[in-house]
Length: 445
Ligand code: NAD
Image 1: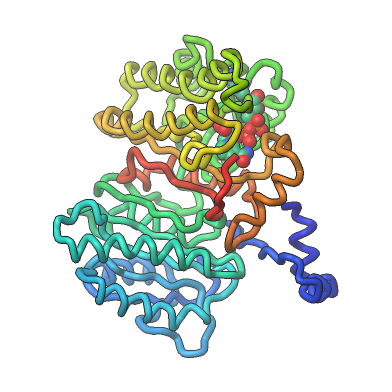
Image 2: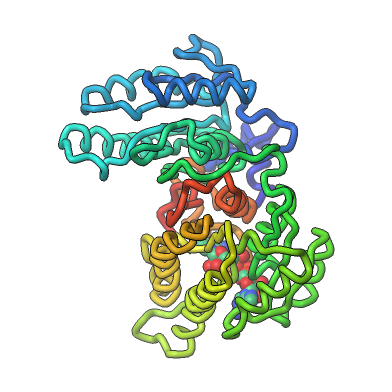
């Protein structure tokens, strides 16, 4: 959705006109704005138990105005629900209805964050039902919110408390403007690993990050965001995109590496460049990707093979080379797609490659963890870039309207923020996961 349309239907006289005409009026999303408060108003923390205690301490430590009950008629910036001790469906009802009372006071750009335990860890039918019920409640709640507000969850594995570094980092990400287009999602924290940054403004200070496919679109935005967060960046793209790539590298004070990532030695070339030019390699973002859409009945080998080669096989090969090199603490983030989760007509090749990324990340996680690192994926939904500009205009318009509460496509920076969150040491307890950045869309790209 063009920024100009969002402004038109959200400001001044044209806002009234749009209202009267019944035009869809998607909100301008609350995105990261340096210097702006973490949340736009007081935070209502509901629920009891150990997680509630840790969450209160964490948020008070950030200087937030934390209330333990609904704040009367006052507008609020966020509702945090400590649901980790919910044992029965009846207990979930109590928590849900209490949250409901505060919802009407949520400010535009507000946040709802639930903290719970995985249903899959429970062998008690009542407890498992209640825990799984939290997923359905939060996802539906996300679809009911307006004004660019979102609802997400943090799921803490057994033995992991709400004070674990990755629980804290996830809470901050989900409350902040950095998670603007993450809606109806669950961040799974599996261990107490990870370290919080000395400064939340520069969580990647001292890190060297490589971003593939960074000459334009989402990749360029990822490079900018990692730089903003303090990293030194190496941007990689095909030689044909060399000029645009050099511009991105110059803008960010990083270096450009012209490289086709399907080359068998791409991993070695990247490692050598990063270590000789910048002294280390700490973060790799596998972002380069292509589409070659065709119905499977009309698919030829060239289309199928090129998509698999760029989107999946290159990553598998590079990961193997990087792991074999014995790098410690390496954090890898790979770009999947909601097409790889929900499927998309005309994209059997693309969806196979992106679902493949999700499988790759899950199985590679223990191998990277053995060297104190981590690997996760980000699955964008409909993001406004050159890639999606090739989708027919009518399909694009429908796709935007299928985001039930946000009613707009995301921006490259929305994906970049999720990548930056997962690339930081704060996400050390999150491994093998796929985080959707899709505004709860029903259509992938
Ligand atoms: P884009 O086409 O705008 O940019 C992709 C970049 O990758 C280009 O600069 C291209 O030159 C580069 N690239 C392609 N093949 C390469 C190779 N062999 N070696 C090195 N670089 C190569 O795409 P985008 O929309 O910015 O998408 C970025 C990533 O996000 C892709 O993996 C894509 O599949 C994924 N994604 C995008 C969307 C979306 O809505 N735009 C949705 C889901 C997933």
